[in-house]
Amino acid sequence: MDCIFCKIAQKEIPSTILYEDDLVMVIKDVNPVVKNHSLVIPKKHYEDYLEMDPNLAQHMIQVAQEIGPKLMQEIKAKSLTLLINYGDDQKVKHLHLHLLPNFSKRKQS
Image 1 (tube, helix red, strand yellow):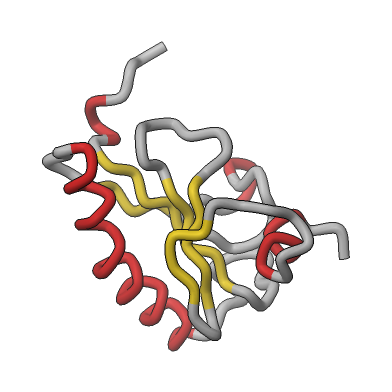
Image 2: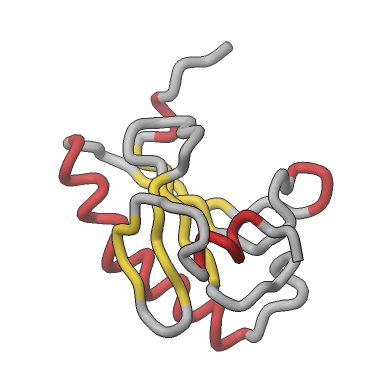
């Protein structure tokens, strides 16, 4: 499989890992939309949220609850947006949860 997130999860490609357990990793996004933009990625490949086990969804949110406030605190953010893209908006076809501190304050183009 030629999936960049699978390669990151298998540590074939380097990334900045903020958190890791048996099921998921939290990494810094290499093309951040906002400062501290990070991703919760499952280690097992799921193309999108329709394929994932509901227990994994719960775990991803629990990890976001632990990591999100730390990302916010580092940059004194007042908000955090959690985002999962699907369909044409999903650039990488491997389920991932975006953690976006101060997303509402990003520069508009």
